[in-house]
Image (cartoon, rainbow, N blue to C red; front, side, top):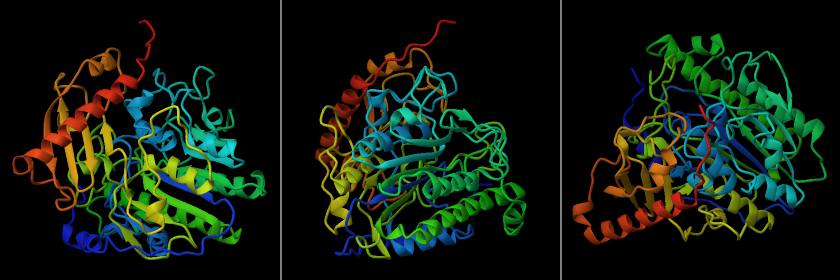
Length: 478
Protein backbone atom coordinates (compact mmCIF):
# COMPACT_ATOMS: atom_id res chain seq x y z
CA UNK A 1 0.00 0.00 0.00
CA UNK A 2 1.34 3.40 -1.01
CA UNK A 3 2.08 5.99 1.63
CA UNK A 4 -0.86 8.38 1.27
CA UNK A 5 -1.51 11.10 3.76
CA UNK A 6 -3.97 13.92 4.04
CA UNK A 7 -3.44 17.25 2.39
CA UNK A 8 -4.37 19.33 5.44
CA UNK A 9 -0.93 19.18 7.05
CA UNK A 10 0.74 19.81 3.71
CA UNK A 11 -1.48 22.70 2.72
CA UNK A 12 -0.68 24.36 6.03
CA UNK A 13 2.85 24.67 4.66
CA UNK A 14 1.59 26.06 1.37
CA UNK A 15 -0.37 28.76 3.14
CA UNK A 16 3.00 30.33 3.94
CA UNK A 17 4.23 30.07 0.34
CA UNK A 18 4.09 33.68 -0.87
CA UNK A 19 6.23 34.91 2.04
CA UNK A 20 9.94 35.41 1.32
CA UNK A 21 12.77 37.09 3.21
CA UNK A 22 15.84 38.49 1.55
CA UNK A 23 19.16 39.94 2.63
CA UNK A 24 21.08 42.82 1.13
CA UNK A 25 24.58 41.97 2.36
CA UNK A 26 25.60 39.29 -0.14
CA UNK A 27 29.24 38.12 0.14
CA UNK A 28 31.75 39.60 -2.27
CA UNK A 29 33.30 37.51 -5.03
CA UNK A 30 31.87 34.87 -7.35
CA UNK A 31 29.63 32.44 -5.47
CA UNK A 32 30.17 28.70 -5.28
CA UNK A 33 27.35 26.39 -6.34
CA UNK A 34 26.35 23.03 -4.86
CA UNK A 35 23.43 21.33 -6.61
CA UNK A 36 22.06 18.26 -4.81
CA UNK A 37 19.81 16.15 -7.04
CA UNK A 38 17.89 13.14 -5.72
CA UNK A 39 16.54 10.35 -7.90
CA UNK A 40 12.76 9.69 -7.74
CA UNK A 41 12.25 11.67 -4.53
CA UNK A 42 8.58 12.61 -4.33
CA UNK A 43 7.21 16.07 -3.60
CA UNK A 44 5.84 14.86 -0.28
CA UNK A 45 8.80 12.71 0.78
CA UNK A 46 10.64 14.95 3.25
CA UNK A 47 9.63 16.48 6.54
CA UNK A 48 9.66 20.13 5.52
CA UNK A 49 7.35 19.26 2.60
CA UNK A 50 4.84 17.52 4.83
CA UNK A 51 5.71 13.84 5.20
CA UNK A 52 4.37 12.70 8.60
CA UNK A 53 6.81 9.81 9.10
CA UNK A 54 10.08 10.16 7.17
CA UNK A 55 12.72 11.92 9.25
CA UNK A 56 14.86 14.43 7.33
CA UNK A 57 16.36 16.70 10.00
CA UNK A 58 19.19 18.06 7.86
CA UNK A 59 16.95 18.99 4.95
CA UNK A 60 14.46 20.51 7.35
CA UNK A 61 17.30 22.59 8.76
CA UNK A 62 18.41 23.55 5.25
CA UNK A 63 14.90 24.81 4.55
CA UNK A 64 14.86 26.71 7.83
CA UNK A 65 18.14 28.37 6.82
CA UNK A 66 17.02 29.17 3.29
CA UNK A 67 14.12 29.43 0.88
CA UNK A 68 11.54 26.67 0.40
CA UNK A 69 10.27 26.53 -3.18
CA UNK A 70 6.72 25.18 -3.10
CA UNK A 71 6.32 25.31 -6.91
CA UNK A 72 9.66 23.81 -7.94
CA UNK A 73 9.67 21.70 -11.10
CA UNK A 74 11.98 19.29 -12.85
CA UNK A 75 12.44 19.52 -16.62
CA UNK A 76 10.84 16.11 -17.17
CA UNK A 77 8.88 13.38 -15.40
CA UNK A 78 11.83 11.00 -15.73
CA UNK A 79 15.55 10.90 -15.16
CA UNK A 80 17.75 11.43 -18.24
CA UNK A 81 15.71 14.27 -19.76
CA UNK A 82 15.51 16.03 -16.41
CA UNK A 83 19.30 15.98 -16.05
CA UNK A 84 19.69 17.25 -19.59
CA UNK A 85 17.38 20.18 -18.88
CA UNK A 86 19.19 21.05 -15.66
CA UNK A 87 22.62 21.16 -17.30
CA UNK A 88 21.62 22.90 -20.54
CA UNK A 89 18.70 25.15 -19.56
CA UNK A 90 16.84 23.70 -22.55
CA UNK A 91 13.70 21.58 -22.86
CA UNK A 92 15.24 18.09 -23.15
CA UNK A 93 13.53 17.12 -26.40
CA UNK A 94 15.33 20.02 -28.11
CA UNK A 95 18.56 18.17 -27.27
CA UNK A 96 17.25 14.77 -28.35
CA UNK A 97 16.95 13.34 -24.83
CA UNK A 98 13.41 12.08 -25.30
CA UNK A 99 13.34 9.41 -22.60
CA UNK A 100 15.60 7.61 -20.13
CA UNK A 101 18.80 6.31 -21.70
CA UNK A 102 19.32 2.56 -21.55
CA UNK A 103 22.85 1.20 -21.81
CA UNK A 104 23.73 1.02 -25.51
CA UNK A 105 21.00 3.43 -26.60
CA UNK A 106 22.15 6.01 -29.21
CA UNK A 107 20.89 8.99 -27.19
CA UNK A 108 23.54 11.17 -25.57
CA UNK A 109 24.08 14.76 -24.53
CA UNK A 110 25.65 15.90 -27.78
CA UNK A 111 28.97 17.79 -27.78
CA UNK A 112 27.22 20.72 -29.48
CA UNK A 113 25.17 21.31 -26.34
CA UNK A 114 26.64 23.74 -23.81
CA UNK A 115 26.27 22.91 -20.13
CA UNK A 116 26.34 25.17 -17.11
CA UNK A 117 29.50 23.32 -16.04
CA UNK A 118 31.23 24.27 -19.29
CA UNK A 119 30.18 27.90 -18.96
CA UNK A 120 31.37 28.16 -15.37
CA UNK A 121 34.60 26.30 -16.11
CA UNK A 122 35.27 28.74 -18.93
CA UNK A 123 34.89 31.57 -16.40
CA UNK A 124 37.47 30.13 -14.02
CA UNK A 125 35.41 27.74 -11.91
CA UNK A 126 36.59 24.35 -10.73
CA UNK A 127 33.93 21.71 -11.38
CA UNK A 128 32.99 18.25 -10.13
CA UNK A 129 30.27 15.67 -10.81
CA UNK A 130 29.61 12.86 -8.34
CA UNK A 131 26.92 10.21 -8.63
CA UNK A 132 24.44 9.35 -11.35
CA UNK A 133 25.23 10.72 -14.83
CA UNK A 134 22.67 9.02 -17.14
CA UNK A 135 23.25 11.23 -20.16
CA UNK A 136 24.67 8.68 -22.56
CA UNK A 137 24.10 5.11 -23.70
CA UNK A 138 27.80 4.38 -24.06
CA UNK A 139 29.22 5.26 -20.66
CA UNK A 140 32.98 5.58 -20.28
CA UNK A 141 33.24 4.94 -24.00
CA UNK A 142 34.66 7.35 -26.62
CA UNK A 143 31.57 6.88 -28.80
CA UNK A 144 29.66 9.24 -26.47
CA UNK A 145 30.48 12.32 -24.45
CA UNK A 146 31.31 11.78 -20.77
CA UNK A 147 31.09 14.11 -17.76
CA UNK A 148 34.65 15.24 -18.45
CA UNK A 149 33.62 16.28 -21.97
CA UNK A 150 30.72 18.32 -20.60
CA UNK A 151 32.65 20.64 -18.31
CA UNK A 152 33.44 18.55 -15.23
CA UNK A 153 37.13 18.56 -14.36
CA UNK A 154 36.62 15.74 -11.87
CA UNK A 155 33.98 13.03 -12.03
CA UNK A 156 33.05 9.99 -10.00
CA UNK A 157 29.97 8.68 -11.73
CA UNK A 158 27.75 5.83 -12.89
CA UNK A 159 25.90 5.49 -16.17
CA UNK A 160 22.53 4.97 -14.47
CA UNK A 161 21.71 3.38 -11.11
CA UNK A 162 24.14 2.19 -8.48
CA UNK A 163 24.66 -1.50 -9.10
CA UNK A 164 23.76 -4.02 -8.00
CA UNK A 165 22.07 -1.76 -5.43
CA UNK A 166 22.87 1.19 -3.19
CA UNK A 167 24.88 -1.15 -0.95
CA UNK A 168 28.47 -1.90 -2.02
CA UNK A 169 28.13 -0.68 -5.62
CA UNK A 170 30.70 -1.80 -8.17
CA UNK A 171 29.92 0.35 -11.21
CA UNK A 172 31.46 3.74 -10.37
CA UNK A 173 34.02 5.29 -12.71
CA UNK A 174 36.45 8.00 -11.63
CA UNK A 175 37.78 10.20 -14.44
CA UNK A 176 37.60 7.34 -16.94
CA UNK A 177 38.93 4.60 -14.67
CA UNK A 178 36.62 1.94 -13.27
CA UNK A 179 36.77 2.00 -9.48
CA UNK A 180 35.61 -1.55 -8.78
CA UNK A 181 33.86 -2.85 -5.70
CA UNK A 182 33.16 -0.24 -3.03
CA UNK A 183 31.96 -0.73 0.53
CA UNK A 184 29.14 1.34 1.91
CA UNK A 185 25.92 2.97 0.75
CA UNK A 186 25.86 4.95 -2.47
CA UNK A 187 24.79 8.31 -1.01
CA UNK A 188 27.55 8.20 1.59
CA UNK A 189 30.14 7.15 -1.00
CA UNK A 190 29.07 10.02 -3.25
CA UNK A 191 29.45 12.50 -0.39
CA UNK A 192 32.79 10.93 0.56
CA UNK A 193 34.04 11.76 -2.92
CA UNK A 194 32.54 15.25 -2.87
CA UNK A 195 34.28 16.00 0.43
CA UNK A 196 37.56 14.52 -0.81
CA UNK A 197 37.35 16.69 -3.93
CA UNK A 198 36.64 19.84 -1.95
CA UNK A 199 39.41 19.09 0.54
CA UNK A 200 42.24 17.58 -1.52
CA UNK A 201 41.64 18.06 -5.24
CA UNK A 202 39.90 21.29 -6.18
CA UNK A 203 41.85 24.48 -6.67
CA UNK A 204 41.09 26.56 -3.55
CA UNK A 205 41.88 29.74 -5.46
CA UNK A 206 38.90 29.16 -7.73
CA UNK A 207 35.16 29.29 -7.09
CA UNK A 208 33.53 25.92 -7.66
CA UNK A 209 30.49 24.12 -9.02
CA UNK A 210 29.76 20.77 -7.36
CA UNK A 211 26.97 18.62 -8.82
CA UNK A 212 25.93 15.89 -6.36
CA UNK A 213 23.61 13.31 -7.95
CA UNK A 214 22.30 10.77 -5.46
CA UNK A 215 20.90 7.43 -6.64
CA UNK A 216 18.51 7.46 -3.72
CA UNK A 217 15.63 6.68 -3.44
CA UNK A 218 15.50 4.99 -6.88
CA UNK A 219 15.34 1.20 -6.93
CA UNK A 220 17.24 -1.03 -6.33
CA UNK A 221 16.90 0.32 -2.82
CA UNK A 222 19.21 -0.75 -0.02
CA UNK A 223 19.17 0.93 3.39
CA UNK A 224 21.02 0.55 6.69
CA UNK A 225 19.12 -2.09 8.72
CA UNK A 226 19.28 0.01 11.87
CA UNK A 227 17.55 2.89 10.09
CA UNK A 228 14.88 0.61 8.66
CA UNK A 229 14.30 -0.85 12.13
CA UNK A 230 13.69 2.67 13.46
CA UNK A 231 10.56 2.89 11.31
CA UNK A 232 8.53 0.41 13.33
CA UNK A 233 5.31 2.19 12.32
CA UNK A 234 5.80 1.44 8.61
CA UNK A 235 3.16 -0.78 7.02
CA UNK A 236 5.76 -3.27 5.76
CA UNK A 237 9.51 -3.96 5.86
CA UNK A 238 9.68 -2.69 2.27
CA UNK A 239 8.12 0.64 3.22
CA UNK A 240 10.51 0.89 6.17
CA UNK A 241 13.39 0.40 3.74
CA UNK A 242 12.13 3.27 1.60
CA UNK A 243 11.72 5.60 4.56
CA UNK A 244 15.20 4.65 5.78
CA UNK A 245 16.61 5.26 2.30
CA UNK A 246 15.42 8.85 2.35
CA UNK A 247 16.75 9.33 5.87
CA UNK A 248 20.14 7.89 4.89
CA UNK A 249 20.26 10.36 2.01
CA UNK A 250 19.39 13.14 4.47
CA UNK A 251 22.33 12.10 6.67
CA UNK A 252 24.61 12.34 3.62
CA UNK A 253 23.33 15.86 2.94
CA UNK A 254 24.05 16.74 6.55
CA UNK A 255 27.66 15.57 6.20
CA UNK A 256 28.12 17.63 3.05
CA UNK A 257 26.66 20.77 4.62
CA UNK A 258 28.77 20.27 7.75
CA UNK A 259 31.88 20.15 5.57
CA UNK A 260 30.94 23.44 3.92
CA UNK A 261 30.70 24.93 7.40
CA UNK A 262 34.00 23.41 8.57
CA UNK A 263 35.82 24.73 5.50
CA UNK A 264 34.21 28.17 5.94
CA UNK A 265 32.64 27.86 2.48
CA UNK A 266 28.95 28.07 3.39
CA UNK A 267 28.65 31.84 3.48
CA UNK A 268 29.49 32.21 -0.21
CA UNK A 269 27.87 29.02 -1.49
CA UNK A 270 24.43 28.69 -3.06
CA UNK A 271 23.02 25.25 -2.27
CA UNK A 272 20.08 24.07 -4.37
CA UNK A 273 18.42 20.80 -3.30
CA UNK A 274 15.84 19.13 -5.54
CA UNK A 275 14.79 15.89 -7.31
CA UNK A 276 14.89 14.76 -10.93
CA UNK A 277 11.19 13.80 -11.08
CA UNK A 278 8.29 12.55 -9.01
CA UNK A 279 8.15 9.28 -7.06
CA UNK A 280 8.21 5.85 -8.66
CA UNK A 281 5.00 3.85 -8.79
CA UNK A 282 4.89 0.85 -6.49
CA UNK A 283 5.52 -2.46 -8.31
CA UNK A 284 5.58 -0.74 -11.72
CA UNK A 285 8.37 -3.08 -12.76
CA UNK A 286 10.04 -6.20 -11.43
CA UNK A 287 11.69 -5.84 -8.02
CA UNK A 288 10.38 -2.28 -7.50
CA UNK A 289 8.75 -3.40 -4.28
CA UNK A 290 10.34 -0.71 -2.10
CA UNK A 291 9.02 2.29 -4.03
CA UNK A 292 6.83 3.96 -1.41
CA UNK A 293 7.39 7.57 -2.41
CA UNK A 294 4.63 10.14 -2.08
CA UNK A 295 3.57 13.00 -4.36
CA UNK A 296 1.84 14.59 -1.37
CA UNK A 297 -1.34 16.37 -2.54
CA UNK A 298 -0.32 16.26 -6.21
CA UNK A 299 -1.92 14.23 -8.99
CA UNK A 300 0.21 11.56 -10.63
CA UNK A 301 3.65 10.08 -10.08
CA UNK A 302 6.84 9.61 -12.09
CA UNK A 303 6.09 9.44 -15.86
CA UNK A 304 3.04 11.69 -15.42
CA UNK A 305 2.69 15.19 -16.89
CA UNK A 306 0.34 16.05 -14.05
CA UNK A 307 2.26 17.76 -11.27
CA UNK A 308 2.99 14.58 -9.32
CA UNK A 309 5.47 13.66 -12.06
CA UNK A 310 7.22 17.01 -12.42
CA UNK A 311 6.73 19.12 -9.26
CA UNK A 312 9.49 18.25 -6.81
CA UNK A 313 10.93 19.47 -3.50
CA UNK A 314 13.04 22.59 -3.89
CA UNK A 315 15.24 24.33 -1.32
CA UNK A 316 17.75 27.13 -1.88
CA UNK A 317 20.17 28.29 0.79
CA UNK A 318 22.29 31.33 -0.05
CA UNK A 319 23.57 33.07 3.10
CA UNK A 320 23.85 36.82 2.84
CA UNK A 321 21.48 36.89 -0.12
CA UNK A 322 18.40 35.04 1.07
CA UNK A 323 17.40 35.31 4.70
CA UNK A 324 16.34 32.10 6.47
CA UNK A 325 12.83 30.77 6.80
CA UNK A 326 11.41 31.98 3.49
CA UNK A 327 8.83 30.38 1.21
CA UNK A 328 8.08 31.12 -2.42
CA UNK A 329 5.18 29.94 -4.57
CA UNK A 330 6.64 31.38 -7.80
CA UNK A 331 7.11 28.60 -10.36
CA UNK A 332 10.78 27.70 -10.81
CA UNK A 333 12.40 24.82 -12.68
CA UNK A 334 15.75 23.11 -12.88
CA UNK A 335 15.94 24.66 -16.37
CA UNK A 336 16.55 27.92 -14.48
CA UNK A 337 19.86 26.87 -12.94
CA UNK A 338 22.02 27.69 -15.98
CA UNK A 339 20.77 31.26 -16.50
CA UNK A 340 20.65 31.90 -12.74
CA UNK A 341 24.20 30.76 -12.06
CA UNK A 342 25.47 32.60 -15.11
CA UNK A 343 23.87 35.86 -13.99
CA UNK A 344 25.17 35.55 -10.44
CA UNK A 345 28.68 34.86 -11.74
CA UNK A 346 28.65 37.43 -14.54
CA UNK A 347 28.92 34.77 -17.25
CA UNK A 348 27.18 35.40 -20.60
CA UNK A 349 24.58 32.78 -21.53
CA UNK A 350 24.66 31.21 -25.00
CA UNK A 351 22.90 33.32 -27.62
CA UNK A 352 23.12 30.84 -30.51
CA UNK A 353 20.33 28.58 -29.22
CA UNK A 354 17.00 28.74 -27.44
CA UNK A 355 17.15 28.67 -23.66
CA UNK A 356 13.89 27.71 -21.95
CA UNK A 357 14.96 28.51 -18.40
CA UNK A 358 14.97 31.96 -16.82
CA UNK A 359 17.26 33.51 -14.25
CA UNK A 360 15.59 33.49 -10.84
CA UNK A 361 17.89 36.20 -9.49
CA UNK A 362 14.87 38.54 -9.21
CA UNK A 363 13.22 35.99 -6.92
CA UNK A 364 16.37 35.79 -4.80
CA UNK A 365 16.28 39.58 -4.55
CA UNK A 366 12.65 39.62 -3.45
CA UNK A 367 11.07 40.62 -6.77
CA UNK A 368 8.57 38.94 -9.05
CA UNK A 369 9.81 36.55 -11.72
CA UNK A 370 8.87 37.37 -15.30
CA UNK A 371 9.34 34.63 -17.89
CA UNK A 372 9.61 35.26 -21.60
CA UNK A 373 8.66 31.62 -22.23
CA UNK A 374 6.18 29.61 -20.16
CA UNK A 375 7.40 26.41 -18.56
CA UNK A 376 6.94 23.52 -20.99
CA UNK A 377 7.31 19.74 -20.70
CA UNK A 378 7.27 16.94 -23.26
CA UNK A 379 7.48 13.20 -22.73
CA UNK A 380 6.10 10.92 -25.44
CA UNK A 381 5.49 8.01 -23.03
CA UNK A 382 3.52 10.02 -20.51
CA UNK A 383 1.00 8.15 -18.39
CA UNK A 384 -2.59 8.10 -19.70
CA UNK A 385 -1.26 9.42 -23.04
CA UNK A 386 -0.75 12.88 -21.54
CA UNK A 387 2.46 13.85 -23.28
CA UNK A 388 2.74 17.62 -22.95
CA UNK A 389 2.26 20.19 -20.20
CA UNK A 390 2.64 23.97 -20.08
CA UNK A 391 2.48 26.25 -17.06
CA UNK A 392 1.94 29.97 -17.50
CA UNK A 393 1.62 31.73 -14.15
CA UNK A 394 -1.41 30.40 -12.30
CA UNK A 395 -2.57 28.21 -15.19
CA UNK A 396 -1.56 24.84 -16.55
CA UNK A 397 -2.36 23.00 -19.77
CA UNK A 398 -2.02 19.21 -20.14
CA UNK A 399 -2.25 17.75 -23.65
CA UNK A 400 -2.29 14.51 -25.65
CA UNK A 401 -1.09 13.94 -29.18
CA UNK A 402 -2.78 12.53 -32.28
CA UNK A 403 -0.41 9.55 -32.53
CA UNK A 404 -0.84 6.03 -31.13
CA UNK A 405 -2.48 5.97 -27.72
CA UNK A 406 -0.57 2.84 -26.68
CA UNK A 407 2.95 4.24 -26.74
CA UNK A 408 4.98 2.09 -24.31
CA UNK A 409 5.14 3.65 -20.86
CA UNK A 410 8.54 4.14 -19.31
CA UNK A 411 10.69 2.54 -21.99
CA UNK A 412 13.88 3.87 -23.52
CA UNK A 413 13.82 5.29 -27.05
CA UNK A 414 13.08 2.85 -29.88
CA UNK A 415 13.53 3.18 -33.67
CA UNK A 416 10.79 5.15 -35.43
CA UNK A 417 9.52 7.03 -32.37
CA UNK A 418 11.12 10.38 -33.18
CA UNK A 419 9.78 10.27 -36.73
CA UNK A 420 6.28 9.70 -35.31
CA UNK A 421 6.72 12.63 -32.95
CA UNK A 422 7.86 15.03 -35.63
CA UNK A 423 4.80 14.21 -37.76
CA UNK A 424 2.33 14.57 -34.88
CA UNK A 425 0.14 17.35 -33.54
CA UNK A 426 -1.61 17.87 -30.23
CA UNK A 427 -5.29 16.95 -30.32
CA UNK A 428 -6.65 17.21 -26.78
CA UNK A 429 -6.11 19.85 -24.10
CA UNK A 430 -7.05 20.18 -20.43
CA UNK A 431 -6.92 23.43 -18.43
CA UNK A 432 -6.27 23.66 -14.69
CA UNK A 433 -6.05 26.66 -12.35
CA UNK A 434 -2.96 25.11 -10.81
CA UNK A 435 -2.27 27.77 -8.18
CA UNK A 436 -5.73 27.20 -6.69
CA UNK A 437 -6.14 23.52 -7.53
CA UNK A 438 -2.88 21.84 -6.57
CA UNK A 439 -4.33 18.37 -7.17
CA UNK A 440 -5.54 19.18 -10.72
CA UNK A 441 -9.00 17.92 -9.84
CA UNK A 442 -11.12 20.45 -11.79
CA UNK A 443 -10.73 20.79 -15.56
CA UNK A 444 -11.95 24.36 -16.27
CA UNK A 445 -11.57 24.97 -20.01
CA UNK A 446 -15.28 25.57 -20.46
CA UNK A 447 -15.23 28.39 -17.90
CA UNK A 448 -12.29 30.23 -19.53
CA UNK A 449 -12.67 29.80 -23.31
CA UNK A 450 -10.43 32.70 -24.37
CA UNK A 451 -7.63 31.76 -22.00
CA UNK A 452 -7.99 28.11 -22.98
CA UNK A 453 -7.72 28.95 -26.68
CA UNK A 454 -4.66 31.13 -26.16
CA UNK A 455 -2.78 28.65 -24.01
CA UNK A 456 -3.73 25.71 -26.23
CA UNK A 457 -2.33 27.53 -29.26
CA UNK A 458 0.86 28.42 -27.37
CA UNK A 459 1.27 24.80 -26.26
CA UNK A 460 0.86 23.57 -29.84
CA UNK A 461 3.40 26.10 -31.09
CA UNK A 462 5.99 25.12 -28.50
CA UNK A 463 5.41 21.43 -29.18
CA UNK A 464 6.12 21.85 -32.87
CA UNK A 465 9.08 24.14 -32.24
CA UNK A 466 10.75 21.83 -29.73
CA UNK A 467 10.30 18.68 -31.82
CA UNK A 468 11.51 20.40 -34.99
CA UNK A 469 14.82 21.08 -33.24
CA UNK A 470 15.33 17.61 -31.75
CA UNK A 471 17.67 15.23 -33.60
CA UNK A 472 16.66 11.87 -35.07
CA UNK A 473 18.94 9.19 -33.63
CA UNK A 474 20.45 6.49 -35.79
CA UNK A 475 19.97 3.01 -34.37
CA UNK A 476 22.39 0.23 -35.33
CA UNK A 477 21.08 -2.32 -37.80
CA UNK A 478 19.74 -5.51 -36.26
